[in-house]
Length: 406
Image (cartoon, rainbow, N blue to C red):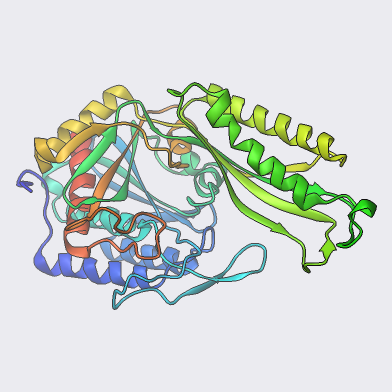
């Protein structure tokens, strides 16, 4: 990577960031419970002399000012996932956490949010140590709760943009299972709109030997699950990208009892609001129809959470691409299709109607087909090259607004 026009960190500072990454990776926290992570970020900002405030519960916002110039916001998410780590790293997480429903679960940074935090802190360090070549204000957003779509909304509702300067653009990035040093950016739609629903199917409990005396919610729910798979395959055009996934199914406590109810959860993804609305409408129609066929009451459908459509602004995206290509090389930066994964990042800019840009940077020295991907128990990016790539990408994009060179 040729990055001579950007601020750089000393070997000592770089190793310090690696240590910070290992600490965060070893100590992940669940969504909206990132208290120790919040305190560590605050300590890092204090050491740099950067003004900061808490926002959205466990979020932190740092304000780095350096004279006249544009205001740019950059977001890094901070939460981990309920996954038991099996990466084999010596700093692998053994942390435990408690879900909102009271279940105790293992926790790991299975989506690489620890790399996001460290990359942004690395960029802040570089800017603090090299104030002569840039001017403006950086709003550093350390956002909790991305995995549950709670964090960005919580920060906005907590007055993020009443307390921080209004930016010209909001930038963000995400580590991926690609080769470290490469970056991919989507033109237009970047990530999918998503909805998660909980469906409760109520029947009538009876002895397993007397099915005629009850209403079996398991059979009804199973038919619903099967019928839901026809939405994408038979109701949408093949060119229309969408996903309908049933991720959990729970019912019963004993093999010879037809239970009172069954419960399952549904997750949808779409690349347009129109497709999303069709998916949700079809889900409701199919669930009502299957309940009628089974002779049971209409199932209860509850929203768990939803993610917005995340769209890269065309003009701002071109500026980011120029910066990334200048820093990383033309051949290392690609423009590709949107991802069907989802992000609440888009709410930050949309809430004040300013453009945003989001991209992915590679996290592995030598990725292999079938290797660990985001949300895998083996997902643990290579620290040295990945953190350098993430920090460089952050600086390269910021430099397009605040840099005096490049």
